[in-house]
Amino acid sequence: MAQGETSALIANEMLSSNKTIHLFNSFEGLPKPTEKDQLKDDIFSLGSMDAYTGTMSCPEEMVRSRLKAISFPHEKFVIHKGFIEQILEDDSNLPQKVRFAFVDFDFYEPIKLTLEFLHQVTSKDAIIIVDDYDYFSLGTKTAVDEFVEEKNSSEKVYECLIPNTKFGYFAVLARKG
Image (cartoon, rainbow, N blue to C red; front, side, top):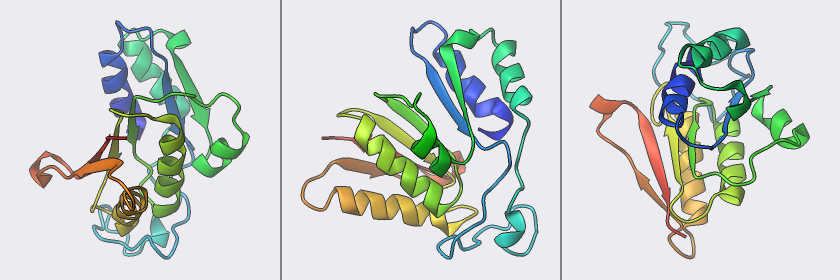
């Protein structure tokens, strides 16, 4: 949810709907990487994956300001603050049904946990976009590829589309079953 720009873009498309947008952010920057998070693209020239711990944080007020700037009603969004593993364990206000998700957690563990959660609350025709696929950390690609392989082991549940990288680095998971 980098400084709220993507959230505002998605929220803007939801202005006329009665849907609630759920936003997830630690507001503490990136977590500590695991061994599956190998540095692929050193975007800030920090030299190692561990050096990125705590980077890319933004204040919660910045996200709220971006939503306010597009006149998105505060009653139509929920901010879930904390690292995703904490939120999934402790938050009682998680969405029960999801039709669209934009996932941008950069590392293996949070991506894998989020995809498992989304698998429980999505149904046929849901779309999940995972940002930074095969970019920055190899963990994102690994998590997505493992998830799709596991869920498609007996029947095709997800179609995974990888657009041309000139449009960005992301994977689109379309739920088929």
